[in-house]
Image (tube, rainbow, N blue to C red; front, side, top):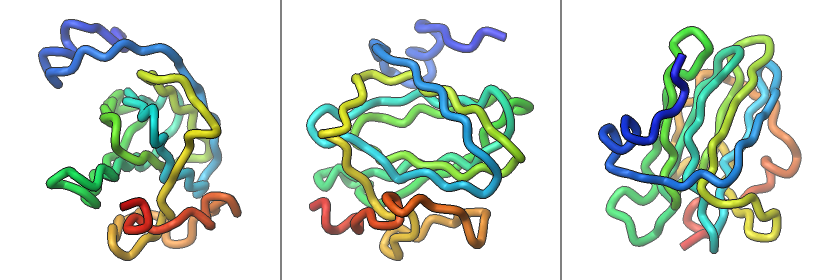
Length: 151
């Protein structure tokens, strides 16, 4: 499997990102992570699942964007081998649908804990149709603010 190829990525997206960091996340069934982003140095992320299955979500958090507050979600798995590009200026989250999932992120900016921002996963102004009724959410993620507080 060819997991990443710069010329193909450019043809499909029109973007030529310079990836500076790869992250690997292992998470278990029904755990929901997110929605996370960075404010001053937003990360573009190319996401793929190397083991298991997740419902992966991106939300436009750029207040100047015509699509502010809109979300996109898709199933990523080791079976369908799909990837999703999360552009800078979008918050990212996922919920695990399999027993375990390993998620690989290619990032265009370095992670900076001091720059991290987020939006609460169940914000009614976004209304994401999560496929898990009662996900396990960390206390930190449960306390994230609403989308409108980022304006």
